[in-house]
Length: 40
Picture (cartoon, rainbow, N blue to C red):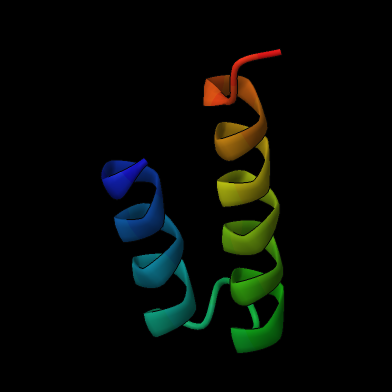
């Protein structure tokens, strides 16, 4: 997850992604990881 966040941050820094789009992707990623790790 840390590596993915780093890639998203670098894309935002290089203006490949908009700041809000990067934040949205990070939020969706953390939500998906949290759901996957949560015992069902």
